[in-house]
Structure formats: C-alpha cells, structure tokens
Image 1 (cartoon, helix red, strand yellow):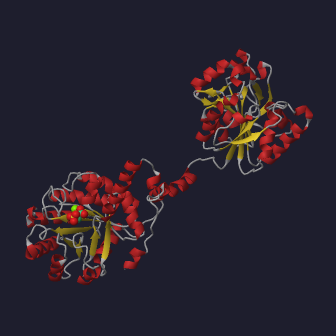
Image 2 (image 1 turned 90 degrees about the vertical axis):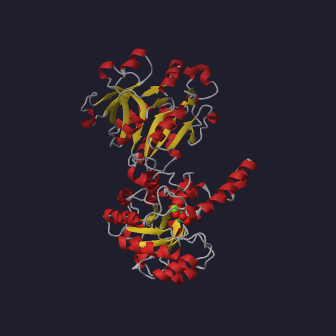
Image 3 (image 1 turned 180 degrees about the vertical axis):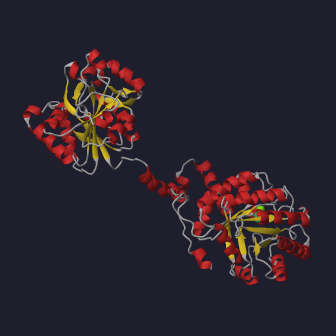
Length: 560
Ligand code: SPV
Ligand code: MG
C-alpha cells in the first residue's frame, strides 16, 4: 500500500493544474499505520515545507516551537491559533505531502478542538497532535516537571469532540502524552494513553526529555501495538535509528532541525556582512537568488504567463523612426536628435520604449541618423541610416526592414518624436488586418494651429459603427481639402508577419527609385493603396502627442 504514497506526483509550488493523486489525509494515515518506521521533518513556512518535500520526506511536522520561533515569539501560545492557521495555508499549498500540525493543547477546551479540526480540514492539513496540558502551554523542554497536566476526563472530551468534528475519515488525531515530561512516570503514561486511545485517538505521541530513549522504549514495550506510537527524539538524538525501528515505533519526528540548521547559517552570514561590509564575503556560501525562484516555483508562473497573458513579446517588434534632427527645436537638438530631447526627465525615445513595453512588446529597434552616438538607451536595438541627411523617413524604414529579415512577427512602426499611451498600441495590436494605421479623429486642432500633419481620407468617417465596418484608407497627404479629411495619422502602422516580405519589397522598391529618396511615410501609404492593398483604419481620439516645437516639449512634460 505504501508504494502508492512513494509514487505520488511531486509538483512545483503554485502548480494549479496538478491533480492530487492521493488525499493528504490518506497519505498520512498510511504513514501512521505503516509497518515501517516513517519520518516527518519539521517545517515552519512554505519554503521549508517545500525543502522538506524535495529532500524526499513523506510528511511534515508543523511544530509549535519552530512556528512560534519563526514569528519571533515563544512556544507559549504567544502566536494565536489563527496566525498558525495562516502559515499552514502557505505550507499545505507549497507541497503535495501531508502535514501533521502540532496543535499544542488544542488551544482551549473541547469546543476549541472541534473548531480547530474543522479549520484544519478546510486547509488540507492531514492530521493534528494535541498534548495533555493546559492552555497556554509551555515547551516540554522548559521546566518539564513544573508542567501541569490536564485532567484525563477533560482531555478525553477534547479528543472525542475533535474526532466527532472531522468529516474526512482519514483525518488523524494524535494525542501526546506528557506524563514523562511532567515527571509522573510510566504507569501514569500508560493510564493516560489507554484513556486517550479509548476516546478515539488514532495514535499516541509519547514524549521524553531524557538524553536516552529509556522512557519511550519502556512505554512502547508495555503499550505494544494497541495503536501506532509516535516519538520526537530531539533529546535522545544519539540513539541509533535501528533501535527505534526495532522497537516498532510508527513515526519519528525530526521536530526542529530545519530551523536549527538555518540559524547558524543566518548568524554567520549576518555577522560576516556586518564585519566585512561587502557581499563578496558571503556570496560563495549562500545560494544564488535563482535558487529562491526555483523553490518558489517561478518557472511555473512564467509558463502560465505565456499561456494566459496576451503577451505580444514574441509576436511583434517595433521600428522607431528616429533619424531626423528636428531642427525646429533649435538649440535643444544642436547636439542630439529630437528623439533624445528630454520630457519629464526622460528622452522621448525612453517614453516610446516604455509604452511599447507596457503593451508587452520588448523587441524595439530605433533607426538612428543625426548624432547617432547620442541615441544610446539600453534595452533597444539600433539600425543606422547613414544617408539620413539626404533621405527621408521611408529610407530609414527600409534600413530597418533590410537589417532584420526575421519575418516571424508583426512589425509596428512609429515616429521617434511621437509619444503616446499604451492604449494606442493595444488598439493597433487588436486590429485584424495585414496593414493597419491609427488615425486621430481630432484632426481639426492640427488644422487650426496650422501645424504639419498627415491627414487621411478614408472609406467612411468616424462613427460608432466604424469599427465593425472596417474602414479603409483612401489617401494620405500633408494637405487635403478639409471636406475630405477624416482624421490625422500619427505615424503608427502595423504590418502583419504574413504581409511583411511583400511590404519589405514595396519599401525597398520605392527607395531604389531616386525620386523617392526623400519620400515620407505617407508616400508609402499611398503607394500601398495604389498597389491594391487595403490599409485598415483604426480610429482613436487623443492619447498621443507629436513634439514639433518648444511648446510641444513643454506640453509633453505633462503628457508624460
Ligand atoms: C514542537 O516541535 O513544537 C514540539 C516538540 O512540540 S518539542 O519541542 O520537543 O516539545
Ligand atoms: Mg510543540
């Protein structure tokens, strides 16, 4: 029967899809009733639970001593039982193996025990151990002989109430006999164990503070196999495990060893760092950060993100046309191109990069020209248009398309002097079209201010139905009769990966013609339409800003 438990699936923490092959309560009952000596390792939080499971343990002991110690308080019920429950939640979530809670005295009388059992079942805790002392208890290794034991009848009422409260037949209630700890001897220990067994306990934990196993061995000899007997060999640690095995104990609990192992490691690290004031002094003695990530199950989350998040990271890349100086900004662009002019403490190009990243697109290439060496933000790829002084935007686009012939993802194009909100990218990304552009319906303000802009005429003006009707571009120009204008193009263009090879051919074709060396992007749009391609219009309103003047730079600060 035990093989089933050993063969259980172990899964990464945070793995929501994993099924639970064997209920934790059933796993624990199998451990308790196994003819072999089984072992539980102490755990006091999610990560120690995970480490214990990874080491191969088939079960965990959520010990009161270490749980309270990790909170920095004493093992005297200073941590409330609900604070313990909260931690148990993290621990059971982190592992597939069962956990036995050290439930101290049951945190009160019979009524507290039945509520405890109910809550433990809800939290997937497989079993609880309660000890025959009074609330608030104290640790068994502190002044044991001053410890007051519970009345047998009263303690039995806690056991009965706990057993009656469980809804899962496999949930186990272990009772801990503290007679040796309190100095009452073997006879009292046996008398109590008998009463607890009769009250319904699934097992007896017989505890001893001696450095030799004489008390627990004597108990086991008399008790024989009336029910499984659990031990905590903390003080009689030198006892050969064979001796415990031969005596027929059911489970040995290594009750505080994770915390005790961690303490000297943490002390050494803290003392060294305090003294040396450099991380080099400890780096070789500690795990890399990625080991923490591994134990947390970070890779599972990354996989889930790929499954669930609408990430366009691998599906799109961006070309930012950023070669021109922008001489209209005067002194501001004497030593750097417009794309590197700072607004809100960061260059325009930095804002553009952030907006695309916020939309999940991380592959961004900027086409540099004027003062190329000053365009040096980290995290971007760069392509240089060496002829920037004699050519137009279309040549910059051609440079980028030729430099990257990987057509595995859609391409977004935008201008290096236009900042925008992520919403613009999202609406373009969602457009189901081989070629799409974003058009602002508030074109009138550009006309009124007499600013240069790319106006577009479309198959229909903006309306509530425009989205469903698939509006297409008719033409784009810097000047159009107002009666024909339906919007202003801000330079945002998306080309699908399917369309990309042909799109590249059209662009390279155009720039090969000397007449097109200074061509701008709207020339390309018209060429696409002339060649029979449909350019889908995505109408939006606002959420972007074109930096063409000093006044724009100031406005951009507040926009950003
Ligand atoms: C614990 O680990 O909290 C125990 C075992 O109850 S002992 O500390 O030995 O009492
Ligand atoms: Mg305890």
